[in-house]
Amino acid sequence: MTTAELLLHPVRLRIVQALLGDRTATTAQLRTLLDDVSPATLYRQISTLVDAGVLEVVSERRVRGTVERTFRLVVERAEVNAEEAEAMSSDDHRRAFLVFTAQLLADFDAYLDSPGRRDLAEDVVGYRQAALDLTDDEALSLVTEMEQVLTRYLELGPGAGRRRRLLSRVIMPVGDIES
Image (cartoon, rainbow, N blue to C red; front, side, top):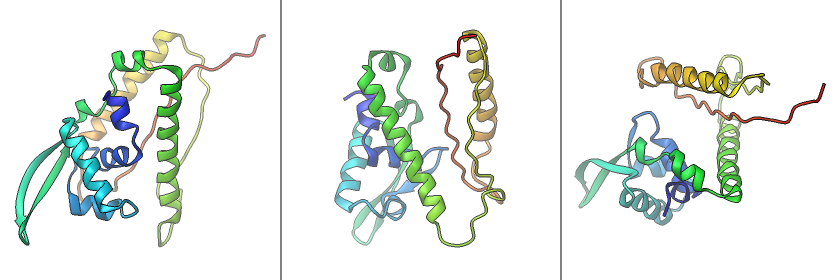
């Protein structure tokens, strides 16, 4: 199974997403977070990710006669590399993008439906689109600079006063208007 096939499963994608940012979680914590997923499905998908090396067990402890495992994401195993992306068909990319956007919509729905007070400005929620006129080299430079900025913030990790936020990026060339 390719990395793309592995990650295109909606439950596996949600498990991976839950552990982004060097987070760890037990199966019980993942069950609470993904409460709409049956326990059997969750256990099966966790097992698939462990077998593929995408999740690793960082600790185990005995809890009421069973072993509770804590998992961590192996980020480099949870990314589709350039060679795999190049080998994907157009339909494979369409399916991958559909899963990506469906998960993005589900995350936004969960935010909008969350109980309590919601203030988009105070919560720093936004969605925007900008059209930039860039050469391929300039576009690559932009993506590289964005990665550097993101890396600096990713390294902060959880802490007092910090709230987990999701940042998604899509970049692609679009048709031009003839002048």
